[in-house]
Length: 166
Image (spheres, helix red, strand yellow):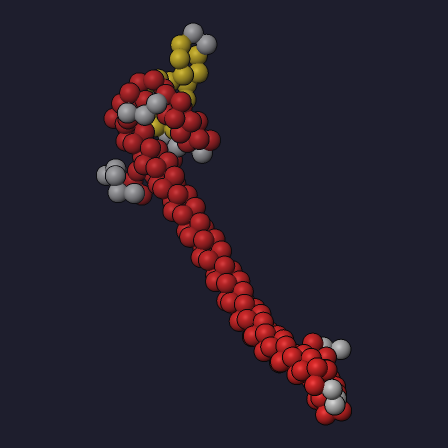
């Protein structure tokens, strides 16, 4: 049985009891119980209304929270994409600098390339090795001397295709 049903049944019983009571003291008690019963009914309705409002607010907050999470995920994905573009652009710029330097200074060491393009030796070595995989640059190995680097035919083609070599 719901709270409203209990309150309604109690109200009917109290009304009937009030009509049947002849004793003034009992009559006053019944009337007091009826007043308290009406207060309980009012309080119950108010509590139910508050609960309904809180449920609506919670639903709105859940929607807002879900939207905020979606917005954050989207912003995060954009930031990652931008960082990947920057990294790719930086790598491309570093390789282009190295190729332009090698075009003017053939037969040089990794350290000389690094100084010439103003990159660290490890970064320069990484890019040279990556470009060597596709024969953009070529190497000459000698156990007695440091590795020497040369511009490869694919490196000249890359510079020519990008308009940096005529």
